Image 1: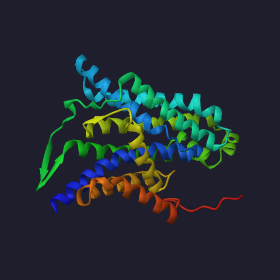
Image 2: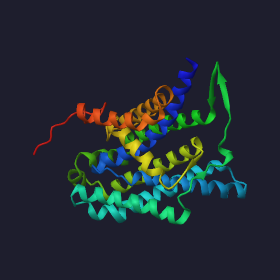
Image 3: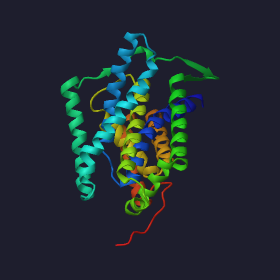
Length: 295
């Protein structure tokens, strides 16, 4: 039983990273109905920034925790530039055009970082080893507690932002009807840009959590992590904040249980089988609602 709870805790930690990434997918899709496949590679960029900034902070004698702020600012800026340069000119184009552009940006970032930093694995610094404590027979690492706590805090803050602030309400209005929102005095361009910045900043936060949790990464990090987070967003209900969290945690727990009790080779097979099943049975996701669309 203690092993089961150990696997469960590890699954919740992995799922928390998936959930943070899925929140970025959810926010962008909720506003402009775009599946931003470049989102995963923003996480990859964030991981490189986190690693580089940590080394500089240590050399300067500054707290390494500042890498969180630096990474979120860097990825937020990248999200803003991506939206302004790549997506804004295509806002009136067909959705498939924006989708292809997102895939192109993904390949662009992957190959740029492979050329600049090579495709070899980068190792996380030892300062991220935070120790552990025990509850009964369960060995709990502090980094797992931190990752899960950050998901709870981030989700609560994002929910309050969307529901209580003026910009959050503007996001909800734009997601419902951009033209009507514009007529009501809402700056649609600013709202969409803000959504991309927040989503990319969350990706930066997720990348720091990934660097803390795992020992290494490379320029292909965004491909694997981004796809898993996308599956999580669809599973929970893409466009919904609670759905992204539920989907991420579910996928994380399932993966760890499969690795522990079946075979690690089956992880991706079962994960994507779940995606196919949910698309066949309930395409809107676990928490999503089926809506009729006039043709």
